[in-house]
Length: 130
Image 1 (spheres, rainbow, N blue to C red):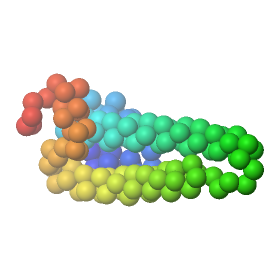
Image 2 (image 1 turned 30 degrees about the horizontal axis):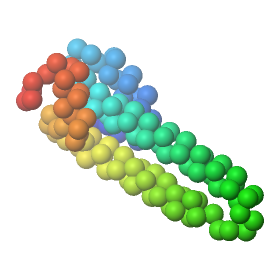
Image 3 (image 1 turned 90 degrees about the vertical axis):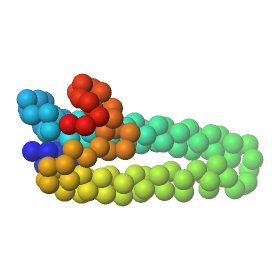
Image 4 (image 1 turned 120 degrees about the vertical axis):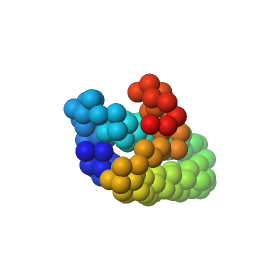
């Protein structure tokens, strides 16, 4: 189930969340599922913040373009590639984390995600080693 939590996290954070609540009696499964959920919530928040910032820059650029009459939209030329780069890197990181930690969970390792592993241990009231 821990492997499944990581593998299904490629689709959404809902599958690891369901596994987390169903398998609460297993510390191992709960730990791995909670890490996947925490990572996806953080990634989702980052995407929402970036999208809001992109829309703000887009609207600001439209407003200033009306006043500038033909000047190139520098805000979009700078922010648009950064926006897509973060989304692409986040998607690749999501894939790598899901595959690597699914394999580790399948081998029975108590592998910690960077940052989120320690947070999951605190939430589950587990020590640094299991």
